[in-house]
Length: 313
Image 1 (cartoon, one colour):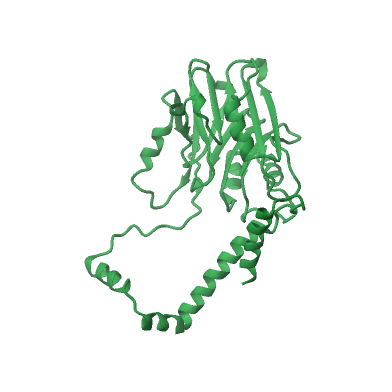
Image 2 (tube, rainbow, N blue to C red):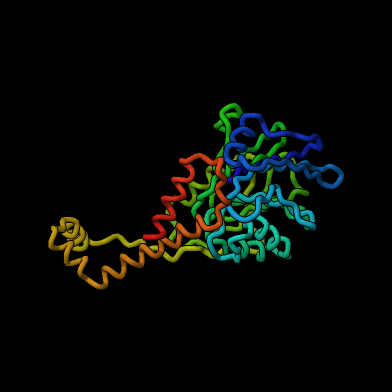
C-alpha cells in the first residue's frame, strides 16, 4: 500500500508537504520515496508530486513515474486481473505505459475500468495539461482532498495529519474519475467527473457529494462519458413475510440437517468452488511478492508461510 501526494498551487513558488503528512506517507511506502515538481506554461501553476512506494511485485519502480511524453503517474493499487501484467512485471510501469498510449478520455476510462483490484491514483496528462485522479468502484484505497482558498492550494493525499487540521481534509468520493484542467485553475477548483455507470445505487449517493469543498465545482463531463460498473445488478427487493419465516427456520439447523447438506453433491461442489476462488485470490496476491531476504524478521516469514500452506490445502 503506497503513499501518494499531490499539491497544486496557482503560485509559481515551490512547496513541500508538511512534515507530519510526509512522515505518514513514508510509513505507507518505506522502500522508495521521491518528489517531482512540474510547472505550467508562464508559471501559471506549480504541481508537486510526492510518492512513497511499498514494493509488492516485479522490479522496484520508483514513483512518481514519468514517461517519455512527460506524463506523470502516482499509483496506489494492485492489479489482479483485467490488464495483462506478468508475475515479473510491475503494475505501475504497465499502467503508465498503457496510459501513455491513450489519445482520448474514453481510452483512459477504459484502462481504469478494466482493472480488477483495489486502486487510487493521481495522473498528470501532459497533452492538454490535465490532472486526473480517482479511486476504484468500492473505494478500497484511501484518497483525501483539501482546498485552501486563501493560499490557493489544492491537495490530494493518501493520508492526513492532525497538525494540518483534520476538519479541512475530506474523502474523495469513489464515484468515478476526476479531471482538472490545469490551465483554468484560480481561486476555485473546477473538475469534470466521469462517473461509474452504477446499477442499483443506494439512496446515499447524494450524501457522498457532501465531501466536495465549497470552493470546488464538480460538473459532469460534457461528453457524458461513464465508466462501466464492475459489479452486476444487485437484488434490491425486500423479502415478503413468508420468505422471512422460511429464512428464520433455516437458521436453526440440527446435526442431521448438516449431515444431509454435506452429503449433497451440489452443496459439496459449491463448497469446493468457493475454496478454489479463495485459493486463486490468495495465489495472485503472493506469487509476485519480492524475495524475502534472510534479514527479514521470523514474523514476516511466518505470515507468508501461512498463506502458502493455505494454497496447498
